[in-house]
Image (cartoon, rainbow, N blue to C red; front, side):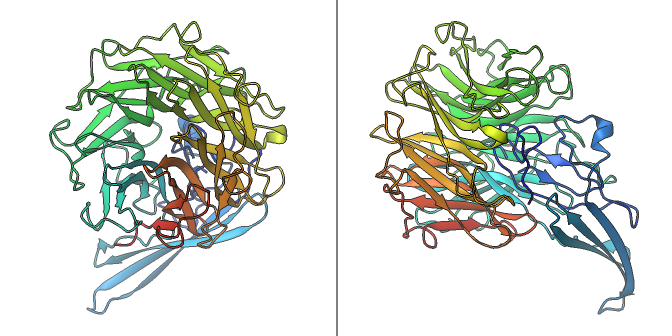
Length: 569
């Protein structure tokens, strides 16, 4: 995969996380260039964007008009071959094979194909040459089992469903959950038109939390129409993986903000209050393309909107530091006093100039003016690059300090892990790394892209970060982790220099990306995300477990690593 040089045209999801992808889709006519659509998962978490093929430049569904969404992408062409024959029972068959050749910006060429066979007028399921499955959220059960959630590709057209899996403590699939340890859930809000292969239906799980009774709450977004309209989406599962029908009658709930624009509303983070209420964060589209606000929704335990939160259960927060701006939420935590801390990014002035954004709201949903004077805080690293500093994750220390992590843009658009610590009153804590801010370059392949996607606080106050590090200019990535002391310096008791990179090396171009971090009660460190199995974009859910010293825990999975393909039963 070629490497992009700016965050405005990048591989990242809606909150700045790296996503891989390239689901191929066919068109109706033969020998016609196919179209590429860029799909942002969050993010979130962001997030190389999943793409489909076409004959012009990549286009982002979140920032493109309807006309732009039907055009697009250079360097791709396809041909269709039709073969007639008979099957073993003597029935007439027609096999249509679409071969797509794609050349990236570096001149690398990849070829893939899909085939559809019609037997006596009945079409069989197309073969899937690309299967992009990505874990975007993780939570631990009280018994130590691991819940992973994300996006699972369900067909060759680039459509996705919620994917959920549960692992035992040793990394093996827990077959008591769902079907052989896996569960796939579709919202089917009408995103895909069966007669139009160019329409999309993408339901993406981005986050997960475990209730005190063991039930599993999964957040994300679901596509409402064939192009750019999405809603917050939530499911609740019983402990065996079955939908909990006491939640919103069928186990699923959808929240639409619909404040204007295209209705692009996506949840990227989740937290549970002590009373069991569910807080979701993400972003909602306002009056026009590119005008988004951080969005919050709170649900009651039965799945209905909690009207004690802002009057209708929904809240949007605009930083508007540059007029109408692109402000997006990525993660949320609940303080011990019940106040809600949200992080993401805010457009600071013009395209390609974003800052970390932090906001705090009261239990009733109002901005907390005891935080930074107006309930909002922005932090820029200003390293001399594009100025795109984007927070992806947050953790709260026992003393109430707020640790925010993400990416800080450096010279020429390259990025480093970026971390800032904020005091309870919203001011920067300058006892942390001298000025309250810390950047961490891995530099495994010269000055390339390193990005923090998750943060967690150990019992001793040490700060553990997850993310990705770029190891070559052609776009290869590895899982990355780092640990800081409470003072904000690299902890050299962790992997000798405070930093660790992990390659799955399953094949292809080795694009392995950690989308978050979770700490076990014994101090072991879980990194989750996706690993590339084969080019161009066959990815699987992936988990790595580290001992407290930063070395792979060989008692987990295979040598400390575990991958979960959803295309295998």
